[in-house]
Image 1 (cartoon, helix red, strand yellow):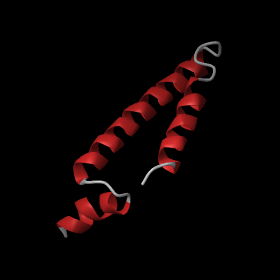
Image 2: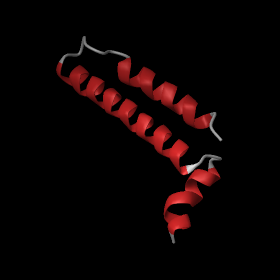
Image 3: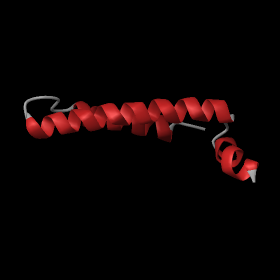
Image 4: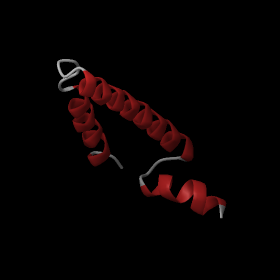
Length: 67
C-alpha cells in the first residue's frame, strides 16, 4: 500500500520520493506565480502580458524532457 501511494509514481519517472517531492513542490509554486500573473493581467491588461504563458511554456518543456 505504501509503495502504491508514495513510491510507484516517482519510480515511473525515474525519481526517488524526495526528488519527486522537490520537483512537484517547485512546479506548484511556479504555477501559483503564473496564476497570480494571469489574475493581475485580468484586472490590469497592461501588466504581465506574457508572464503566465511564458511560465507555462517553460513548465511544459520541463515535463516533456523529464524522466
